[in-house]
Structures are given as C-alpha cells and as structure tokens.
Image 1 (cartoon, rainbow, N blue to C red):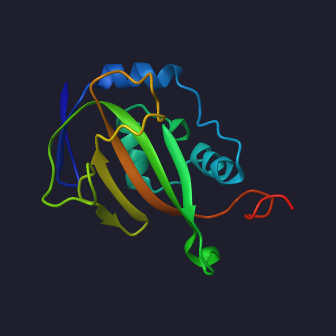
Image 2 (image 1 turned 45 degrees about the vertical axis):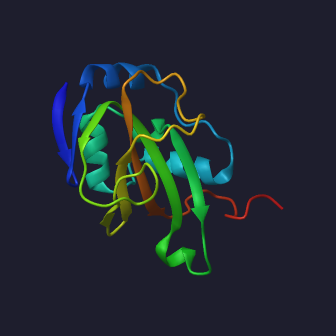
Amino acid sequence: MTAVSWYGYEVQVDLEATRSYYAQAPDWDCICGHCRNFVALARERKLPEELLAILDSLSILPEKATYVCELYHDADWREKGLLYQVQWRVVGAILAQPPGECYDGYGPLAERTWGGVMLCRVDDGYAAPDFPEPWFTIDCSLYLPWVLDEPVEGPP
C-alpha cells in the first residue's frame, strides 16, 4: 500500500490492484446523452487538470468511471456547464479525513473552481459491484460543457 494525501484526506492505495482492475475495466457504458457527453469529454481529457493528475497517478483512464450522473442543469447551464457527479473507485482505505462531513458517509467537500471532490466509502449497490476489497471512492461534482452534436434535452 502507498500512502497518499489529497485535499486533506490521508489514504492508503494499492496501486497495483487499482491498475489491474482498470486495465480490464470497460469505459462507462450508459447510452444516455448526458453520460455519452461525459465519456466524450473524458476521452479527450477535457476534465480539470488536477483531477486528471490524480487519475493518472492511479493509472485510471477518466472514461472508466464507476459511476456517472448529470445531476441537473438550470437556465444558465450554457455559461457554467452541466453539473455532473462522477466517481472512480480505488483499491485502498481512507485513514483520515479533514473535519466535517458533506452528508452521511461522505467526507467534507474540497471545493474547487470546477466543482468539488470528496472521498467516501458508500456502497450504493450498483457502482462496480465486482470491485476488489478494500476500496474507497473519489467522488467529484464538476461542471462540464455540452459537446455532443445533439440537443441537451435529448431527441424529440
């Protein structure tokens, strides 16, 4: 296990087990427009640089997220982007977290200009059910532009 510190969280990461899982993991495969929009951006590495640096250090391709959801968009989404929740699991354990809690089971949100990131161990029952133990999740909220050549509202 390798000791790592991100945003005030102290974790231990099994780099080889994480690398091994993601080497065979598929890209996020939901076919809805919002998820396809995320995958298109992730494949082109159009995510925040500091997030890409963390994923790169773990040998995780960003398009291999273990959970993706566009949370909402409001009237001015074209200026600020669509708000997504994106998660990547990591083989390892959270040893310590900054004070506070975002909500039950989730550590405090480290706010960034692009959104925020927190680490947690919350099993929702459907994100990467075959992921090796022990694990924790890098959970991000981030604003992303719409890049698909189709309406954000979906087909008529």
